[in-house]
Length: 180
Image (cartoon, rainbow, N blue to C red; front, side, top):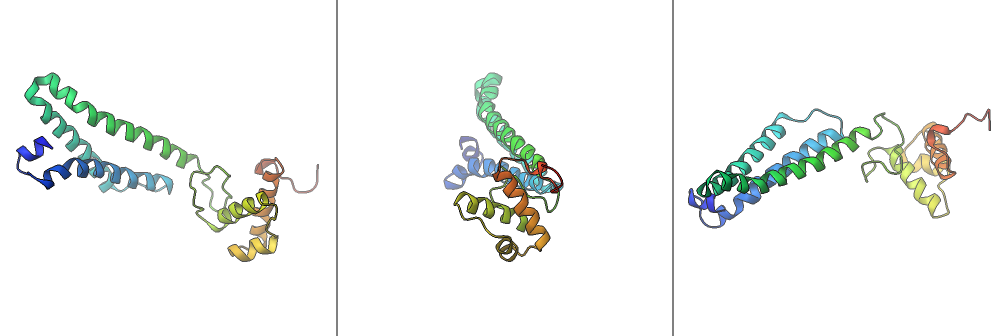
């Protein structure tokens, strides 16, 4: 705030600069996260604004410490480095989780999938079926099909996978009825 107000932005605007700079870092990171979750290329603008936000926060913090010498500049830069570093480490974890989420279109996401909101009808049907099983009144095949607009084949696949899960088997362990 002191650096900004001394260099021409006194008053309320000067006090908003730190929030705006760090907010830019957060907003750009959220766009990068969204791109990672949807397995898309991140927009260049997001990378550019993330870099600009990091550069701005470091520069302003260094300028705040310059009057105290080079050691003061380094110490003043530390909070900005810690914020950006910690936030980006968190985003790395979230992006990695997004990459590990089921990639196949039409696959039924496991119970602990990354997104709390289903991204397709099959995932929504699976989540609803899990909830109704837990409540003791599972949806029928016809209910799964009609409520989620699934073909009978897709509804059967979802129901079989979720019921196998509920019976303690992994979805990959389901069989074709020819064996135990």
